[in-house]
Image (cartoon, rainbow, N blue to C red; front, side, top):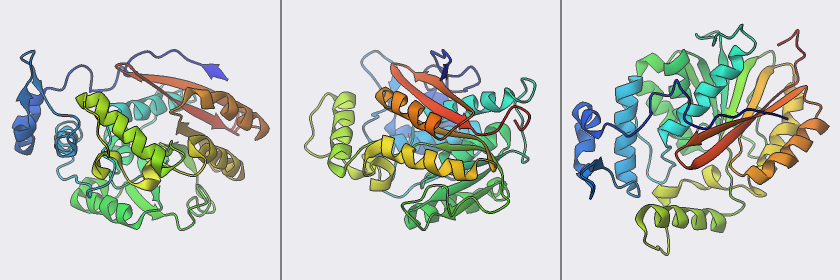
Length: 306
């Protein structure tokens, strides 16, 4: 599996360095109550407070991506936008490899976001950055309703983002990709815990790392919904299913991709992709501060098809 070294936020990512909370507050006054001066004299937020994080996201989406109205129901995952934007920009690089080094933009590029969630974050960022068209798949009816509301309240999104219900929770691509439909990319941020208990423990650890305080139970709206955080067998089992299904759509998708949160899962995934007879597979590393992440990409298309 080809590996590339990318140690920091993507160069095209607009979220380099510290948040300019003063400028963000001017454009989104609802953020201001959550902004305070820390012990070093810098403006900061309490990142363990779900309401503060949501207000920050609303201001970032308005300031950088022209999204006037964005909200998620209590209990749903509130995504860190800089890291989500990185995935989008590296996907742009992936497509550029087969386009003479130029990132293809516009509605001719069609992307499938697997498990788009109530926040619809990847379609928003991808459409704003490169004007790509998106289909977002989702199993949760409340998440679909929330995502559809975001589209309705932001007219520029209406012709470019579609949300589809996955009616079979055991399927990932089947039932979503339609006959004769072609996607240039799929992307996915799979649930990575193996159980609800593991997800709760992960949320508690996250709160502890942010606040320095131990908590017996993390707030649900801090951690996310069950389908967003855990699945039977964890991340590796979810990706195994995705790889198996991807071979059924080998001629309808250019690049299949998924985030992989646990580095120990990379070797088994490499073996699975070899068994599935993927023609090319690669790991694309990403980083945000001290946090290391990566996504895996694979294709069944030969060089002339690509």
